[in-house]
Image (cartoon, rainbow, N blue to C red; front, side):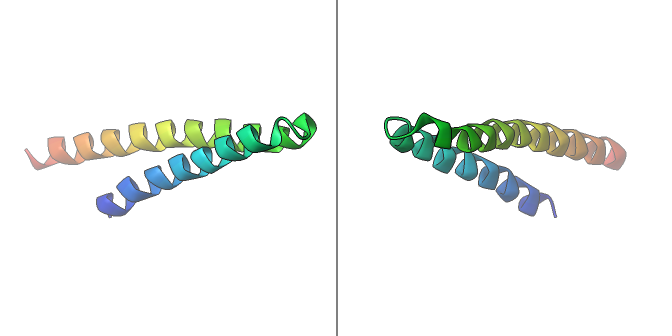
Length: 67
């Protein structure tokens, strides 16, 4: 279960990377079209940090309970 959580964290980073790429390519054409990708990038990075913190807290709690 924990291994799956590690991989889903990086899916959020992948979404953020794709969004940043789309921002870079669309910005010169029409900046108004990039606002949704800016939103996706910010939310994806925030979810990555939240999920990572939650997973580490869960691992620490599991480790403490085993000792």
